[in-house]
Amino acid sequence: TLQGGKQAVSDYLRIKRMVPICLKAEQSYMLFPVIDRDTRMRIWFNYACVERHIHQELACYVQFQNGEQLQCTVSKRVFQKQLDRCYFYLYLRACMMNRR
Image 1 (cartoon, rainbow, N blue to C red):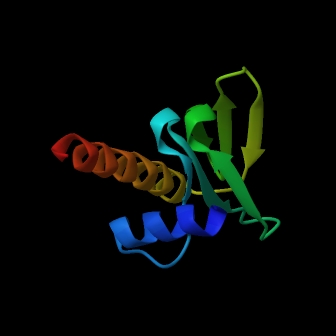
Image 2 (image 1 turned 120 degrees about the horizontal axis):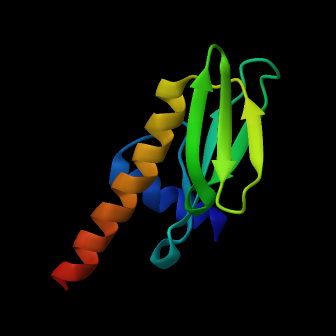
């Protein structure tokens, strides 16, 4: 379930806010939230689909694997932190699975 995927990440990373949701770890399918500064809306990104992100002034341009692009106002620090959280969870999970 979505709640189960969120709780697993929360427990592994020991975080309570802005928690990514693991959908299918084997294929790196994780959703992570960021809050757009201008609209104050939460935007969810699929970790597996983000190819790169470029920051210019206050804008963040997110390039996806399918070539599409999205512009939002999220700081580079926040966006990178969320990507790192997803990567770290997937890494920890893979390490735990290899220990078995």
